[in-house]
Image (cartoon, rainbow, N blue to C red; front, side, top):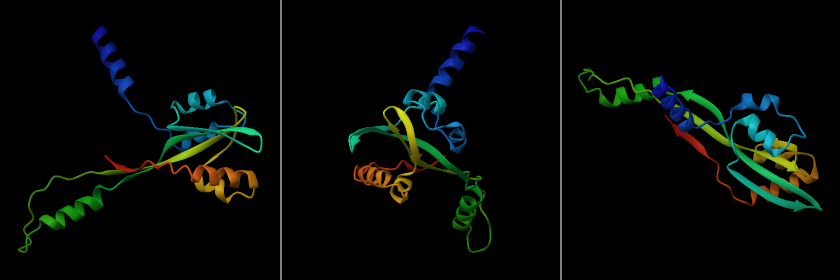
Length: 152
């Protein structure tokens, strides 16, 4: 029993967790960076502290899993067409399963240690608020790479 507990603890510690849209449902303006990390069960990938018009800001970049798409049918069809010979004899192929995971940063903006705004980078630049537009331009000029897609 003792070994089972140790193995379970090691496996849990090695798991990588990425927040999803569902985690955004309970986030409210005014929470602290520590509260956000606890709610998301994750730490920011990047933190950029800056001042603008005499106010202190912290932009915290979290990686979110935006979508998962099971691409096994399309992938299998392509692979099957590549291995089929001209006499319509199909070779035995394993069903290849592939999941495409789309990830992106959601940027949480803290003003004096209180959450003020969150969204994708383009959200900051398309807001009617002139301050958020300036912040969006500042964040855009940092050239922080998006995490992109991966395959499982």
